[in-house]
Image 1 (cartoon, rainbow, N blue to C red):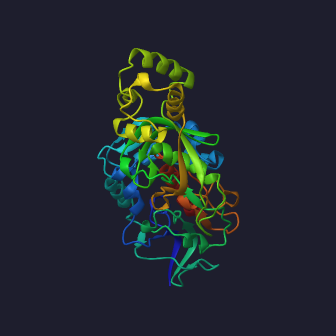
Image 2 (tube, rainbow, N blue to C red; image 1 turned 90 degrees about the vertical axis):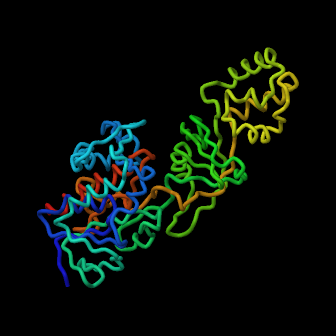
Image 3 (spheres, rainbow, N blue to C red; image 1 turned 45 degrees about the vertical axis):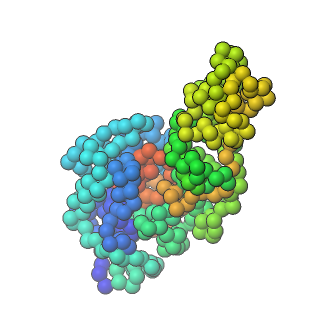
Length: 396
């Protein structure tokens, strides 16, 4: 039986960073069920790798479900610490999203992998059992174990509900996060249309951003971020079964104009531009490829002139510009970017990432009940908690 000081389960961003932090002073083995490291990392940012978000830490923490838990890890391993690991620079884009100047996620993975020269890596190694005395699969013995197996999203990368059963650590309900939404409406005729800078609302939650129409529903940054609020509000647990979804979301297609302002504008324009076809008039509010679908939902003919549209129809146009609804029937779980829920934070020491239930057991990354919006926030969690877990385990 091979023996190590630290065994790290999972070769994603959190596991790799834990191995980097722990190596040098400890005998470390990194166990990865895939034939290579970082499969999910290669998919981030459309293959460009939105490696982190560059907001100041104090501001950054406000975007997460549990900022107090993350505070110590974020200050222990900062963005500057992360950038220093690479021999190339980074580009800051909108909303403080950070990308490598090479614009290749593969360069991020290579830069991290190059720091693992003192780490034993075992590929195609799926952990099935961990005994009470930290023997893994009856063949590897470790003094300390770090679990960084990820959540349940993107199963092709190695994530699996089975990973939560490796220990007796308490677990919260596990749900889809940052997920596209499936609609009851057939949107195949307008697939590819983007609704730019709109406000999407569900109950009391509102998110401003772009919405992209797909063949089965809605996606894009606005929808992806709102999906967290929707998922949190539904009672389900993916470790038990899929959610039962039947709800309505509304899109404000003209968020910078109130209903009253639209009414004044419509009233004046309908008089001054009476011969204009409504399909042409709406181009100032909607993208061209969405207008026909919008008018069909409003029950109006696009070739109708403004002067022929009655008050009732005019009010219906305004109401739909301010509140265009979609019926949501499911999450597109195969494309969910993160997992909501996981290892209960109430049983993990935020200063070390060590379990308060099982000594010498640590957790890092998405396996924990930690998540944020899209835009580099979730990789920030992975890198900072991974580093803290590796550092803490190596110092014990």
